[in-house]
Length: 336
Image 1: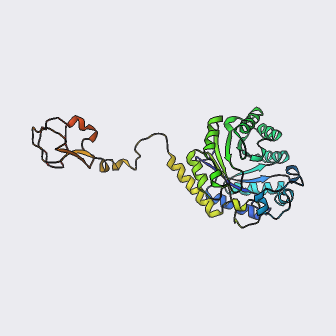
Image 2: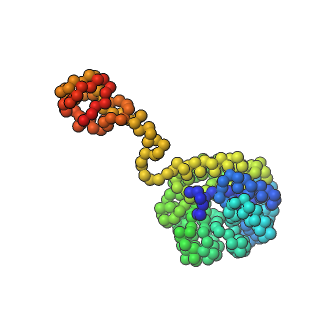
Image 3: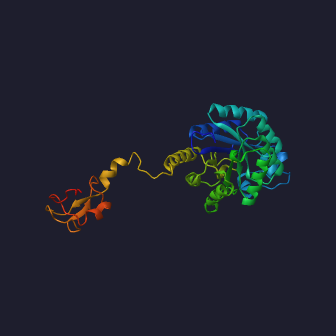
């Protein structure tokens, strides 16, 4: 991603705006202040997404009062005009505007807005026509992989690439689609399996309740982190309880940026900050007692002490058995 940082961080607003543009803008404000790179919403036409009889997931039943997925989603739709307003407000906050489309019509709307990045939600990974459409846009694409197998990921990538999307423009997001995700079901190592299996960049879409897992994912090499953001976990709506509040989100971004700094490079060399300590903490070969001229160096008259400004203890074998050409007092540095 074209981010000044190593990790592209997405504040997932999703439907946590509850259909209220003022709430949506407050979420954008928080994302902008946090140091995130983008904020993402969800774009759908309820009649194109679910049947009237589609049941809600258990987490949706617990956190929403609607009787069906359709009625729940209908209250959370954003109009085309809403998109334009939020797109403009996002730009003013120096963020990238993103939205996951959940149907072909919604994808077309998002493409007409000239979005830089498209995000494929986990539920569409086996939707052939959907994948063909996204591939034809030839844009940078994030593919979320909740509830999927390696085989399903492989087929989705094939469809995207066959229809015009370059593999180098795709980042595959490891994901668990339970809200919230039990910590022992995260399986972060699978992210590395995906990376190695398909030679793609990887990231992580998080649904745990804390911030530890996204930070760990970055340490493992995630190039994208997506995390749900809410103004208040107690708000009514399907995703609020599995989201994090502003202070937590800001702290998560801060921690990720610190992790980026500490990852460094594969080179193992002394850093500028520690080099000054080398002579202070390493040891030299020194006299353990008085040594006369002509005396032979052995383990009875030499030892190893700080500072490290003299001969390295690694040179001990070159000293043992040699004849001293000068007199040494106790603790004097031995010279060749």
